[in-house]
Image (cartoon, rainbow, N blue to C red; front, top):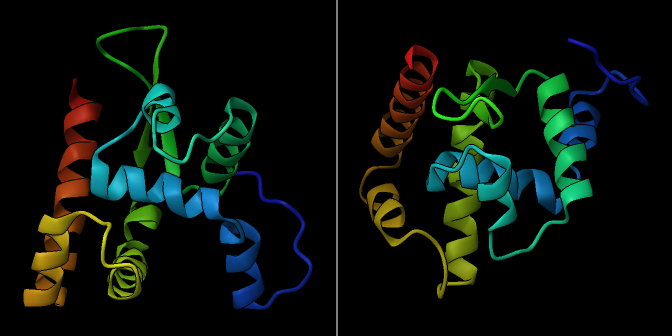
Length: 142
């Protein structure tokens, strides 16, 4: 895994250098909460990320080991981006962002997940992590 040169060794700096813009969070949202895993699925999101920006962000996620890239078993010319264990470890942070954002922007968000989070956040996090691991395994076995 190639890593970019960092401005400092500060853990917050490391995180900001990876996740310092909206697109990284939105790509992770689509993987974690919306089950998306292909370039075209990411492009179809409401926020309308450009192909060039999406390519750049996916390459950074690949470089950092947060996602892996595999050939689709259904279409050899299509790639799938699967979340790695390193990415799955981001679920608690993403759940916190989702929960916080929904409190101050109550018109949006995945209602089913928000309900589960509000009932039992720890259990919802564990269930989402398990689901992502299972989804990854099922794609790898195809």
